[in-house]
Length: 219
Picture: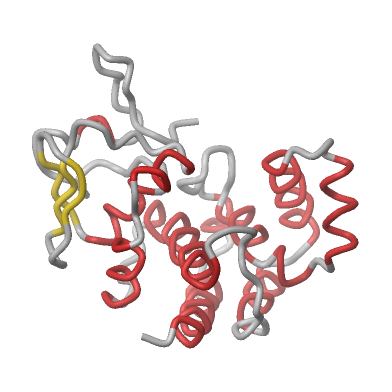
């Protein structure tokens, strides 16, 4: 798969999704704790819209704390930009060469796919990410990457229903590949998307178990 072309296609397709949202949809809480759909959309295009010198100034203002910087910038830009402008920022930058600081082209695709799902899943949107994109990202999930994103995957086996992919050991958690990808990026999911003995702890709002493990990503 041409990862650059897949990333461009993902951005274009997500821009079409954003174009079709109602006014109320933009204020629905996303899977990113504390962010609505509009903050996620603003964050997705931040790297396209922000020259490096300005980004460094923003980081300095946040005292070097990357998560603080991305949060404040997402909230500011979500308030300043219209929904049409947020959708256009993705569409117009479909071929932008931006990549996260680590991870290269695969990480850039993962950034767009996961944040797109952060938007569509809580909206109940029926979009399915093309399986070849999901497969590539799942094949790059490692214990180290899961820890980096705050995912608590110890003690379960993730089993994709629609792809030949498993990860981990322990009681099974079954679901669509794109939903399991979200677990690997530290998200919890709405009720009804996962099955299996180990699934309950990954449902949004589920109580923590005796080991103190709750749904990763609960804000």
